[in-house]
Image (cartoon, chains in turn blue, green):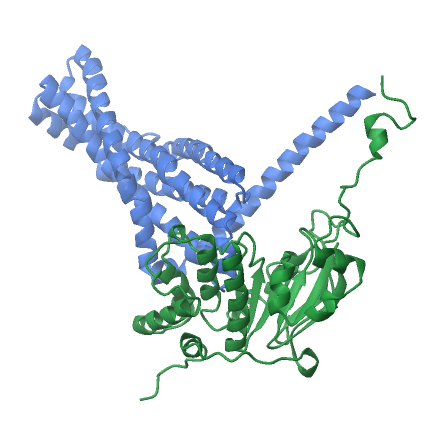
Length: 267
Length: 301
């Protein structure tokens, strides 16, 4: 009797969690639709979006560039170690460039963007909610979705591909430093093999599409978590953590789906 | 040369030529805010109503206080008047418009004629004092920047803080932040100003300053003010009429003079700050002796 009651309670709890998750997904979808619907001011008053591009994009440059440099250097080192076994160390430029442009550039840049800019967006919106700034805006007949949320969304969406491109460029430079300058791989082979192997459409454009999708996902998650945060210190800290965790998982999941569509069958 | 726009309030306030309007509640015929049979409960707990059968009439040009203990539903009432939440039943009308029947455009049009002072100011922390006050002007008008500058300085002068325009909210004291928020909420000369606990956490000087400003600004603007507060002494000095709310119902109402001499138990306890009365000192609990295990006269083993 007691056991069946416990099972009953457990099933109810699981059911409640599932219903809550579905409800929250629906709420998030509505929120995303509202952002798109109320994006007018983001484009009509571009200074709002440009200001947010500065906070989300420009201020993320340091971490993106430094990380890109080190990732490229590691790729150069590891690539050389592996390729020299087969006598094809000149192909290290190709390895570095393709790894960065196709995968590591968009993915790692997006993960860094989620940690640095995404968490900042969530904390800022959450604190605005906790200190009644969003409520004050509504009482002033100014829609916070249009005035606060949408410019941040578009700033994130525009910043992400640019940051990923800079990450990849810095990574290639890091690979060049290690492979050519430090190890002594032939410079002509390094660049020419890279130029021959990297395709604009299949590699670079697909990489940009990936980072664009990641930008949408990360920024939308960060904004939703901030807007939905409980208006307490604990609520804001929890929302910030959820942003980083959810956005990171979303990036990795989306990366797999996009890679499956883009690169299956590509030589 | 005539001005290309209307200057209603700021000049009068800036020049300190405000003459308080002598008001008598019974003489005013039209009400700016009317509340009829208002009931409200959150959807998550419908069995625990916050407001029960509230009826109020708030005449134009008056300062009305809504008083009551913490959690009695005062702020909820303000949110219902502002249209942030919808009543479970009954209605709130502002300037003849039933608030919960308005669509979002209609509600925003109505809110442009309202101002609200939040409990801790709710100033935008990423903007300077100047930009906070100019916020609504920039959002809702096409006034040139030079005119906005003059208007903002006039509003700041009215609250005695001209010279702080370049500061950020984090550089202001609590009292100053409240005054800036007050200047911001009258930025567009609203017809209705709502104050949510305007005296909370202020020192005695700031408290008096905010109280006087509420009265002066209301009179200068010809506006109507609703002050939600539990600060009895300060609010009774400046308001025309008082509603007392307890457990979601209006338990008393009248002029400040009537309230001061009222013998109604709740009003008497509230006005004189007594620790026991209709609002008990002790939270509801099982009998003390039973909790200590001495209900039968012997100590617990």
